[in-house]
Image 1 (tube, rainbow, N blue to C red):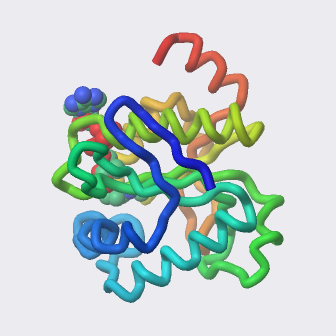
Image 2 (cartoon, rainbow, N blue to C red):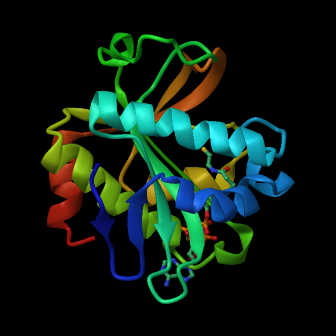
Image 3 (cartoon, rainbow, N blue to C red):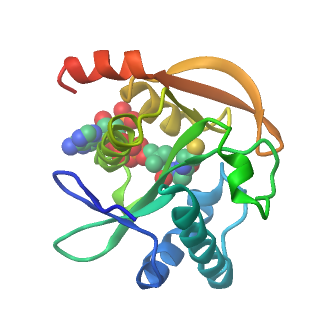
Amino acid sequence: MTNLHTARLRLEPFAEAHLDGLHAMNAKPEVMRYISGQPETREQTAAAIARVKRCWAAWGTSWWAFVDPNSGRVVGAGCIQYIRSEADIPADLESLRSNPLEIGWRLHPDFWGQGFASEAALRMAAYAFDELGTAELIAVRNADNAASGRVMDRLGMQYRGVERWYGKLLPTHALSQDDWQRHKAKGI
Ligand SMILES: CC(C)(COP(=O)(O)OP(=O)(O)OC[C@H]1O[C@@H](n2cnc3c(N)ncnc32)[C@H](O)[C@@H]1OP(=O)(O)O)[C@@H](O)C(=O)NCCC(=O)NCCS
């Protein structure tokens, strides 16, 4: 499991210690509006932490909590993980390894509009390209989720059409290793 750092955040692989902070975020309807449409219960967030720990063990990548190093508060969360075409996660995590890697993010609303998601996204993308050596990253969103689309744009991702992921037809954006190298060279 790999800890990452940015100028303002510590990115920590999900652990039980993040339960209160992750639950405070995932219980907010405005956070889940374009994800599942349903606020998460504490039990669902606890189950997600357990699932993410299994993913880290299987893949060497999954979800991080974004933590403010000064206050210790959970600002948000993000992932580099193997995407799946169906809604349900299969018991055999290895079966997803042939799928593309996905980048994703969410923030507690107290931290919207301050650049935290884009800052963490750059560091997670660097992990995927420079440390995992992936050839491509994709990101998916609800068509109405304009704020997430702007994070994808700032990361240099290109819209490539509607594709079927998580059992739904979703706008899909992609970033190739070449585009990433060009984006980095611009000093962003
Ligand atoms: C998607 C989501 C993470 C985007 O959050 P965000 O705060 O808009 O994104 P960032 O943290 O990158 O902040 C960028 C915004 O802050 C502004 N900003 C202010 N100070 C800034 C700073 N110091 N550095 C960079 N940007 C700053 C930028 O101008 C930008 O605003 P704009 O998008 O209106 O142009 C957030 O809306 C969210 O958590 N939504 C619910 C969960 C969700 O839908 N996740 C995505 C699923 S696909």
